[in-house]
Amino acid sequence: KAGVTQTPRYLIKTRGQQVTLSCSPISGHRSVSWYQQTPGQGLQFLFEYFSETQRNKGNFPGRFSGRQFSNSRSEMNVSTLELGDSALYLCASSLGTGRAAIGGYTFGSGTRLTVV
Amino acid sequence: GENVEQHPSTLSVQEGDSAVIKCTYSDSASNYFPWYKQELGKRPQLIIDIRSNVGEKKDQRIAVTLNKTAKHFSLHITETQPEDSAVYFCAATGNQFYFGTGTSLTVIP
Image (tube, rainbow over all chains, first blue to last red; front, side, top):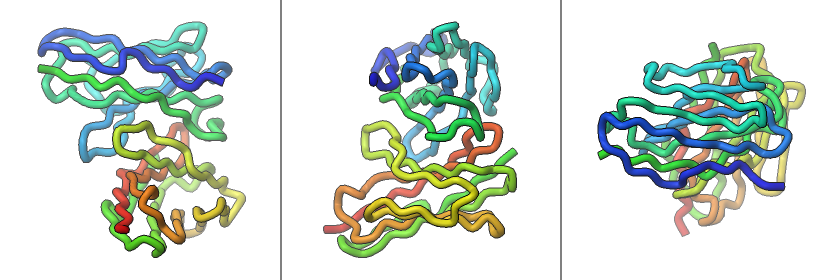
């Protein structure tokens, strides 16, 4: 089966711009989570969506937002980009959320965002 | 919420030796504990997981142990090989996945 697909793979934006990243989960997976990963840092949780509803949210400013569509595809938006937003953004899909995510997450390859 | 601590942050071992990475968690309700391996420039991939009703699980050279009473779980890699070099993340599931901060493992040939 197809894996988790993230587009685009690479993105260069200018400070102040906004950006939208896309994530298509594995077929049948209804949960999509987003993570920010910077060099030397771990996986910083952004938010999780399940059945078009945001279930959990991490400690990121309101410039970071997301949504999920009826086909489980998810988008993440970052407005008013800052240099510090440069990172690898990973999404992961799973059958359920939290304790129901038995089988774990399957990660996409990520979108590497560079803000200049 | 859950708090997952992972140690050590870096680990170097000689090829053929064993490597052990430890994680502790705080939420006694967490019941699923996966481990992910992230090679340089690649996505994290699930390598082994354990549920709270099991104390140990093995898969070839990799094993995970869980001590629910002490709230800690560990990844054991035996007979390490250079291709085991990567960053390893533990996680515990409460209402969401809580990841540890990662361990960079280097296997020296």
